[in-house]
Length: 279
Ligand SMILES: NC(=O)c1ccc[n+]([C@@H]2O[C@H](COP(=O)([O-])OP(=O)(O)OC[C@H]3O[C@@H](n4cnc5c(N)ncnc54)[C@H](O)[C@@H]3O)[C@@H](O)[C@H]2O)c1
Image 1 (tube, rainbow, N blue to C red):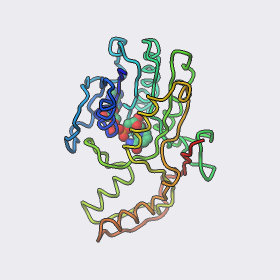
Image 2: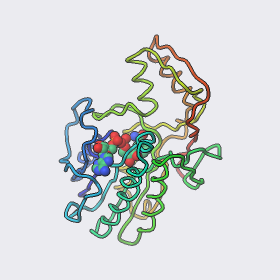
Image 3: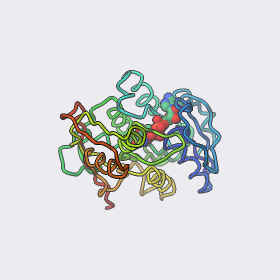
């Protein structure tokens, strides 16, 4: 399958693109290269050819012959999203919707959108499922819910969007992210031998290895259309919901000698446990 993947130079995309190629797919990459300077290591056997372009400027020509789009390229976390909410809405909501519309108009049949479990925000249930009410708390999370809402309306016999709501990823990638919780704490433990939390660490977070996110995307693309058509899937493991303080304690144990302290309850009120069970 010929697949246009946006965000091929990011944390997930730099591993997903070679995995798709190993599965025999042809990958065309698009990425602005915002974080290329933060490249941590080389080492993937295959590298997708990536066009240096903003998703807001993708044209029909860029999509020519593509059978699927996997859309990763957005401003990808809450703090970055809050820096300038207008830019976040412009790229993450409007830019993503425009890309889906263009893909549909260009005859692309599958559109995989990397949403996030952050749409659940402050959860009102013990374990949230795909049917639970969303409650986004930030511009980043709100954009995810808006893209899901708007792209769902584009689905028809010829265009099948699928929304993968990923838990918070962890694990090594050539373009490493140290801003996400487990990577962040492990980075602090290794470099400073100290985790000094400003919050009490009580909020819940679901974790998932980034290679499992890649696997979920490959499965979505290769699944029969009727199974994934216009569906939302939580991507995680129901057994891998942790309170942030538990994650910190585990990291501090693994990195022997790491000091650990907690603060008062913090400003971040997001807390959700996610069910990723099969039906
Ligand atoms: N990593 C996680 O824990 C996680 C969890 C849930 C959802 N997601 C979603 O998965 C996707 C990929 O996440 P990631 O961790 O690889 O993020 P990332 O920030 O590492 O990668 C995003 C890539 O997109 C590019 N990009 C950003 N804006 C662009 C634009 N306007 N045009 C073209 N390229 C642009 C960046 O240069 C970067 O290489 C994002 O949509 C993110 O919201 C990630």
